[in-house]
Length: 208
Ligand code: ATP
Ligand code: PRP
Image (cartoon, rainbow, N blue to C red):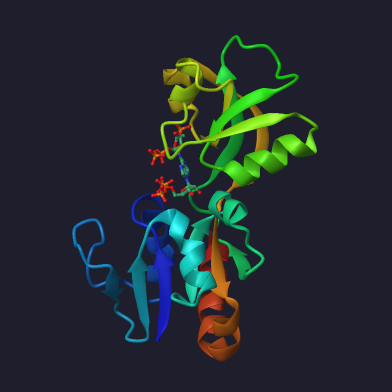
């Protein structure tokens, strides 16, 4: 049995066509069902439905053999403990700094609100900028508006969320897409099955 960890919403929706090309269609819809383990049309493959930020943890500990996770989540988790063999090129966006439309260039000490604490720390340290990082779990865009932070580090796709809140993107930290990650022991113990799945995903991606 191969267990694949996936999060509901954006990643599941964009990963589903890829999974289906590999003959993997879940027997329940995770958006409707309360089940956390989904059997699929392939007897040898099941999905576990978890929070996006938990995917690396499940795969690292071998609770799932494979997972699909955003590069943002992998960067923050630290991905040394996982194999990351495939860029699935889904859920694409940018990790950026953003601040008030008319705010001056960031110099000196800066307060940054983000859920990407380690990534932000690393980014500002590399640029020699002293940053006080404030951990938030969502609605980062609010922080500069209410004086909680000078800027944010968050994901930007269309830019609509920033625009709606009078903010603008400043520096690109990294282009983000979702990656297939594999547990290191599973890669050895279930090599044949995992290699076959990787090949199927690669073929589908190559045709896109
Ligand atoms: P959690 O439930 O763990 O807090 P989340 O709410 O961030 O996670 P999603 O919003 O489904 O979960 O995002 C999952 C992944 O999709 C992110 O890690 C990122 O890689 C990507 N992503 C997030 N927002 C966007 C967006 N606006 N456009 C494209 N991709 C995005
Ligand atoms: C993400 C991100 C931004 C928004 C950017 O939030 O945290 O707020 O998308 O997308 P845009 O540039 O197209 O507006 P998401 O929609 O995942 O909401 P959540 O963080 O509350 O889950």
